[in-house]
Length: 315
Image 1 (tube, helix red, strand yellow):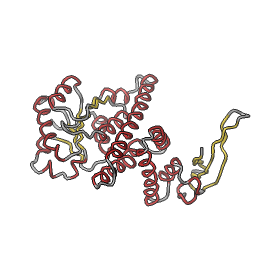
Image 2: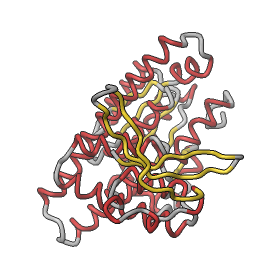
Image 3: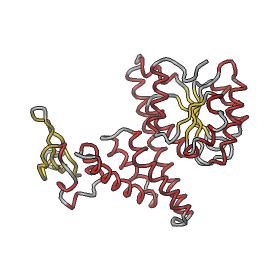
Image 4: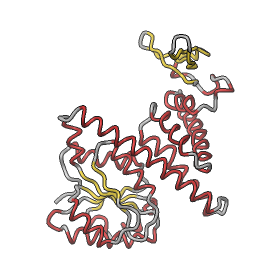
């Protein structure tokens, strides 16, 4: 395995291209320096020998610590291309392996926002233009769902271990008690965004109830009644489903009038905010519209509510 190792000397970080090899005699792994790369903040992909420039772990490291935004974007593009190919090949193991390598350098939200999200948009665009067949589009979407499912299982396992190790942790107990329902309106079959939100919220320790896709409003109301969540996140991808979302929110606020739940609404359908803002509906119903928002921004909004001990809406 080849990767870049950081070493700090007198407050300055220097990078080395190293290879990990198994030593059978000592029954341990040894690091062999392939090349000294100089100051970490100055290295680019050109510093790396050609035979190692396609290694995702190396690309991820340079994109995290590289000297310029332009170089970072170029490297992210390389990683996106690699992930796109793995999605088309339905290579779940390699996708998860890529996530494991990438997560050592970047946050989970960065992984979803900068890698997976642009690829999913690109896949949708290619399909609409007829440049990607239906089978390949479905394979990519299902592969992404499978990868996220594995990531979520890892996160839940990690959370459970932390709770056992630190049962009295204030922050852990606070987020665990905070319950969030993630859903889509009836007729909305696109639920990858819900799976990603579930993943990000699990990583923060929240109790997440993902009931997507396409659930009738009456069933959502009944489920809210039983779970008694602190917040609802609704994802809507198709603009045709905006009116359905409005009716859903109407019913939520009508049913829980005495203790109105904060509703966070996000998704690709909100790219043209005027669709839902034109009638003053959002302001009247106290909805938090996340127009063209990153997943990180949505999670930050929720975290702010939890950390300040305040509900998102005003009573």
